[in-house]
Length: 118
Image 1: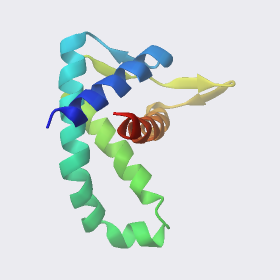
Image 2: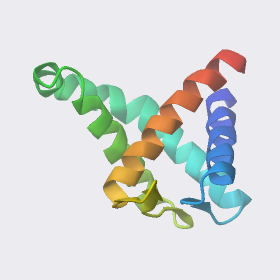
Image 3: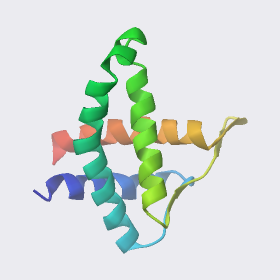
Image 4: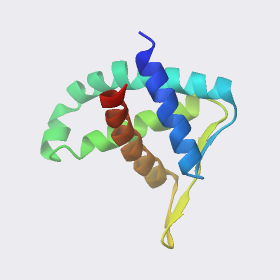
């Protein structure tokens, strides 16, 4: 029951340690953010995938990354103290939406790796 929340907390902690654009205020914020992200990604994402299936089929699955990005943006809105700032990679400036999209890619990848390990 608590395994997905712990997994999400560990991945968020790793992302906050590796990337300077992911900021978590304290441990309570980390716990609340991991609970909110786990709820959003396990309950809301399947519903949105079913509702938006025609758009997802037309875009050959690319729209699922937009759904993940919007869910992560909702988590940022719901949890005060959990922020993702715009990033610069190799001199290319990414605004907040694209930096959240890159973080959602990293979050999804690390969550799948953590799911295999934990």
